[in-house]
Length: 117
Image (cartoon, rainbow, N blue to C red; front, side, top):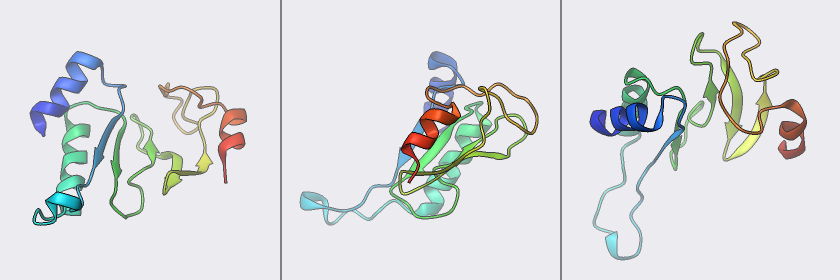
């Protein structure tokens, strides 16, 4: 995981979103165990340690796995659950708490409100 996270950060840039999804047994792979949630959480930590700013977990339950955090102060900026937008605190492409620039497409309030459920 460390090498993969480092590659993404160095070759694609630290603002590149990194999505990590849990494996679940299905069809012809029923004998393979699912990915433990702790493994994914550790992989997320590694991504952040290697300099990635936006690391997300999928196919695993738990609060905060899909949220966007400010890479500077760590506050939750965009809250999601089950791929649904719950809140967006990004203002003008910046963190409202510390003013850090936040990378991403469609982060303005208008677009976020359109897709909120």
